[in-house]
Image (cartoon, protein in one colour):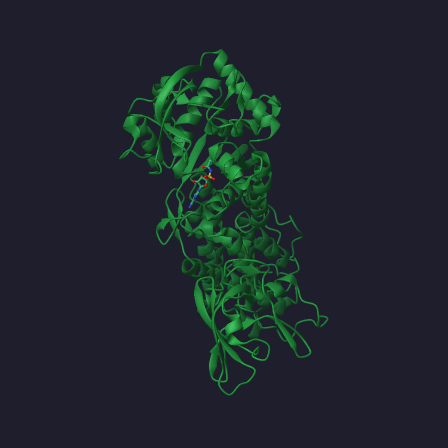
Length: 640
Ligand code: MSP
């Protein structure tokens, strides 16, 4: 199964941005692909990082009154923390402000300059600060930036240029002769369309008088390097170019360079021509994925409609979030993110189909054997059908990796799980147990557990934590269950392993309470082992969803001297709660305060008035104080 080496990159993110679902998506996608390739036995390297030079960073640092590098040091942690929360297994995190990277960029610039690939010339044109790009008069659309529609500034200055234009014909031929170079195919066509017009040379310098925050040109200290020229070089500096040639030869050319559709031209035109001039081979594939939209419009921090990945993880867990992003988006196309869509897929694929199947198999094996997974007896046609469906799912998953159709691979595994649920209904192992048909019972239980074993292996790259939990349930020590590659070459080793009792893997999300998006509290099984009364696990704690809420209105409840009826706002959604705080607070004193509420409490009627949630307060004797937050924070923020 192994195809040898796999080097995957993500774009490096502007350190200024607040990470949102778009950034999380590319990084998770790269992580899933890296994990899959490791699981197939490929020698894998995964690079991600941050883009830290340029006008936007300089402006943001100036606005905060801090030096640019300090600004970068303080903001880069957002991306590093997000990576940790998402379970990202990158081998290196590169920052373009690191000394080794700056040295490589300078060496590349000097070499290209010495060989006449970079020259100096007068430039007159239009500059977009937002995109940090120059445009000619004819590029402009209604006098504005053709990329983002913002105002452009007329600029006349002396600058350095990379002879990009002379590579146009070569690039057109290369794209035509290498159908895997730019994917999906329609993005290759888009690039060829762009190359139909004349290709100009690329301005690769900025005078320090206008922009000081960048890598100094080695041949002219009055200039810094254009941020895109610097940033693209991360893909080679990050694996040792000009520093560790052995390592570089091991990884370059990259196998897969993931990008979003908005940065196609820089990657499909600037980058290949730069590599050609440097004298390096092309990456095998540059893959442009689509965008996540909200309400079918673009997401942006300025529109305030971005989906915060941290909040999604807090609500539903990291693996459910990873699963949704991978299963929902057909690679290459745009997809819409909505909470309804997320809950619907979670409840149907994970809670109903997979989660239920795991619970059923778990309970039935424990009931039948008290632990050991039985060996199968003679296989009947329906057993062969089920095992055949699993095998097909494994093949589809492996081939979907090559064709970058991850959603199809995941769907194939889920279809096999659904076949498992139908198999169970058909074979009715509970009836076999009652009738004492032990051999048949054991065969059915074995085949069902085998489906779970392969599912745990196949979905591990997408849901590493949950699938590790499933493997442990099936009696495997961490890492022992094997790889996707093993599924094709090694026989299974499930019979005789000791099944362990499991908690539900994917507790259902209550649709009624979708604003909370929190797993419903599980009923405690009667036979559960006693725990010390005052200890709870972190999972139990997180079942209570604590959120900030703003009090919009408050009034006394007639004939109840302790109660107040509060109208509150939780993340843009109005709610009503009834609270026993009338002895400590007057209604007027409460309006406008930000309090903390348990947001996923089942609604209850108090004195006939509906109360959806509970506020938190500290109490000592008769004294009561509301739990509030330190400073301003949006209502609906998670607390924990
Ligand atoms: N710094 C440059 C990349 C330099 S690579 C040498 C950059 N950074 S970015 O932070 O603005 O964007 C990084 C990636 O996030 C891009 O691939 C972009 O397409 C992706 N996304 C930003 N918003 C997105 C969505 N709403 N959905 C999916 N991905 C999106 O560009």
